[in-house]
Image 1 (cartoon, rainbow, N blue to C red):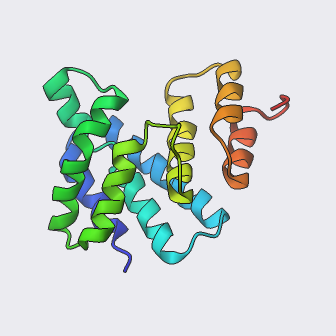
Image 2 (cartoon, helix red, strand yellow; image 1 turned 60 degrees about the vertical axis):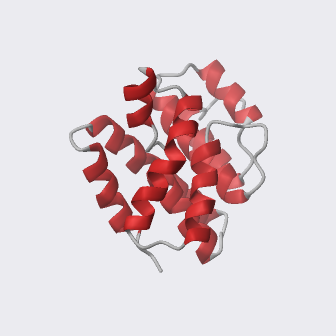
Length: 167
């Protein structure tokens, strides 16, 4: 049952006036949705991917408060519990929440990607972060070679950042 709109609204409420964070998760959600559909995920995996994309950075708020840092390791540490609270409030089932928590807890860990939703979430986050971090073409090529695996994700990053370059 699709409730992604309710998750988006809950995350907007969670981040409040932090428009930068809201815009970030909305962009990651859009790319994740697009890549997931391009890779023809089943309905359950697609919903897992979309919800995870919306909440993937939920731990950043606590990370900044507790550690004065938005580093990925702190987001992975603080995010799962926050995601669980939010998704419980919205009526999601425990198994689904556990799967989202896993993705939130690993979305900055690239050496153990073991599912297609995990791969797509990482790719979508990179597509957005490369722009937000004003990354060089050289950095983008390295990320393309090391991280990107899905044909849809590869096509998007090539078109957006590497058009006219050898990837």
